[in-house]
Length: 117
Image 1 (cartoon, helix red, strand yellow):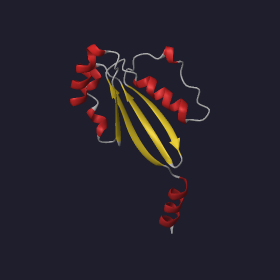
Image 2 (tube, one colour):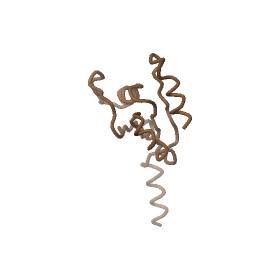
Image 3 (cartoon, one colour):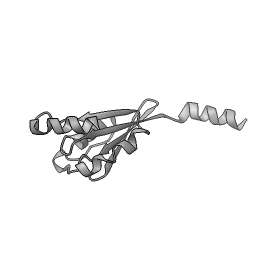
Image 4 (cartoon, helix red, strand yellow):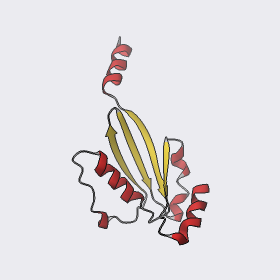
């Protein structure tokens, strides 16, 4: 009986969760992308002042609920020292968004190398 009620509760109220990694070199716009996405899809979320966004040390986490789905975003820091930690998050993720700053042409090759690792 408990299993039946537990299953019914999960079916009615629990959201499917998906985890999305946001990766890229430092200053590629990952946190800005996350803040803009949260602003667009979350009610009553005002967002950070985009001019106040600084380099991410570690990670930023964002959650967006759309219908019965919850998207959990992990915005990982892009500094060279932190790139070694990226692969630790792959097993738990369902999708990867890799940001490239197209206006920083000098670092496009570096982005390609970071993406290939």
